[in-house]
Amino acid sequence: MTQSAGTLDVIDIPEHCGNAPRKAVIRDFLIALCQRDIPQVQESLKDDVDWDILGPAQLQGGDDSTSWVESQPSATALHLHTVITHGTDCGADGRVTYTDGTEIAFNHVFIFAGHSKTAKIKTIRSYLVEINNRR
Image (cartoon, rainbow, N blue to C red; front, top):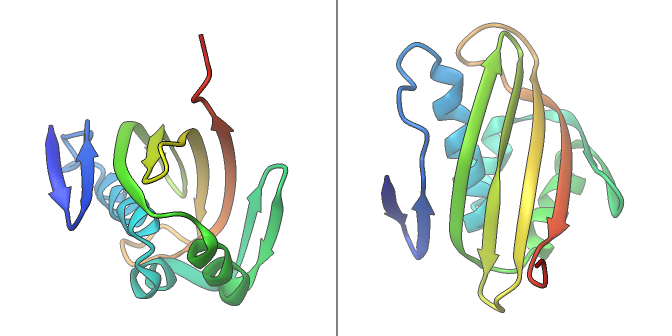
């Protein structure tokens, strides 16, 4: 399935979110992240979120997270392959294409602050790998 979210093409959206509403939360967070939609990203995260971007950054709290999101290049496409949820633990993988042609494969592991449908993300571990020259 493909849809357009502003100028971002969102491709391969996992369907069947009905029995696992967190899948939609994760999907919407990733779209907001790629669009650099700061208010939506902030709405999804706890104020004291712990976000470990393996390698380049260890983000503590909303201000660090906002600064990192703002520093990212504009994305043109989000290919969301898999979203897996189990209680408060979730994961998603796919790839993002940026306006400069760079393509990044990602895997994000999310831990929510609780089991309620309105619980915010308290921890993220992100694995980002540039895949442009992969053969």
